Length: 565
Image 1: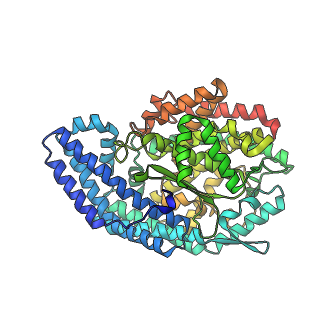
Image 2: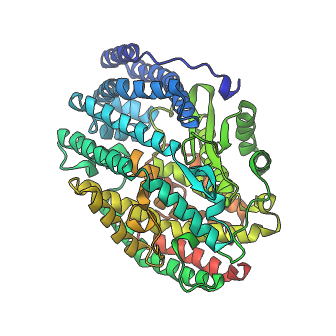
């Protein structure tokens, strides 16, 4: 059955609550460890059905933000799900309090219980209406993003179609494209400010109702930070400022020289050569076909997962009006298949999103082999981003299929972009700490805070007088800041690990890197992020020198290959 043919049926949330209450009763009354385990297995099977319908609704809403039916479904779940979430926490409590916990931990893993302890700290009956309010605001933001269009040279484009103009080899075209996009954002500036202001306020109310000083500690708990804390993240960001920002500044000076300009402007940021960056020689369906064939050739395991996805039509890749921006991979659990969403726009981003989301999809296919773990011990988000960001590098041997004789240049630009991302990702994270540690900031003060961080993390960029971009508002285009607070540092941590995978690939060969990648990925969610990395024999990003080792190797590779540009 193809994804588009899967029948959707609205979840009867009150009935789900009743079933969870029955699981709680059975678990509390279990007379043996086997009986208690049986209850949890029944719950996991039930959760697979529940998550499938939730995922289908979310997918279909993001594929067409103007679809009134699925918009209604998403609003229904925003209102109906908080009581179910609260009831699930009661199930976690019964699991933690079970007299058979030692045996259950042995069967389902220590991390499942650690994560359950964290989940119990994130919800209470008093906040259910506020959770509904928060979810509705996230839907409001996504709808605003999906509806935004840009007037450019007499034509109207969806925001997701502007990539080819913003990466044009013609500098005047790039600036004009950024100006047009900035004006589009500014036309909705009040809505963006208002939605985020209400988000910060409701999240702060939720946190204080639960007994926290502000949303920051609750945000960490929601992200299931089970092996590190804000102080460790602050130290990591400091390393990025000390080790990565100077290297990127060096690379930016070389870039300006190549482009024949005095200083890199914001609209020059991603342009590495005067003639423009390599673009894929394939587009849309042809690029998709080449991507599928790449995963068929990569390994027997990747061939199996991509074949199933291809057969089921588990993709929505092409940009169009009223489609949500960005890209993601999710799982349709009952049908044991991932689903990849993207917005191809004719740039290198098309290749990167396919390889990145393909890494998520491959990891899910491996985890499906141990269905008992799914639903209780899935890896946390930064652990999952290692799957995807490492896969981007592991696909390097196949880039000639997408770039022809420009493949080596594309690899180098990809690596430079990976290093340049680290300051940006840390800036997003620090901005959110500032916002939630100081929830009474006005919208104008938030923009001032962002502009100040730009000078710390990206002092090498000149924003000139670009509307929107030069006004400390760039953060408003970042979906995660609105819908997934504190997520973004996950990409930075994962990028650090992925850079070590690349280091292994360059020094020991692709096979050695692939085996290390599998050693990490096959663990699924059986350990914390720090534990998974250590178990695979990789450097933990928080350890002294870990970031330096990965960045030094990347910097050496770039300097050795700069002649390609």
